[in-house]
Length: 224
Image (tube, rainbow, N blue to C red; front, side, top):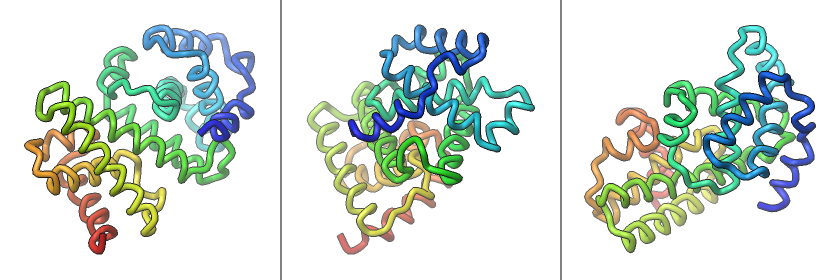
């Protein structure tokens, strides 16, 4: 993790590479969320890396880079271990879940052009783990499970995730898709009373999309 974070920081050109407006948006987002400076550094690097690629340049001409700036902050916070829920990001940064999810996915997909920030597979794995932890915490906060069950659920999900990756789960499945599919399988296997629709909503998916991801996960883990 430390080595990967160093890779992120080495890419950062610093806030001097941001426009005055971009700097203001970054400062506002970091202040609203109370994030550490290392998250800001990583977010700036992610944003500049994305912005300087063809897909980023295209979006710059459309003057809609604001959402990608917010998504960069969200991704950086997640990969550096911030367990805030997606709902908190959305509420405090005034963005819709649909736009935030789409922007995050576009940034992640841009890594496939040239992986400079962090190896894509490692980035997706870290984001998936964070999403699993955040979802489990949300279920515990709503008293669908207790703290002991939360710990069991997270451990089970981690085991399934590691096994699925060993069996060939590639980064083409989004981190939210992975987390949703693995969470659903774990909840079913542990017989925890968490409704399917709650799992889907926690991951930002509908039930149909989650079912497709779950089937893919179960196919990989059928011999486990």
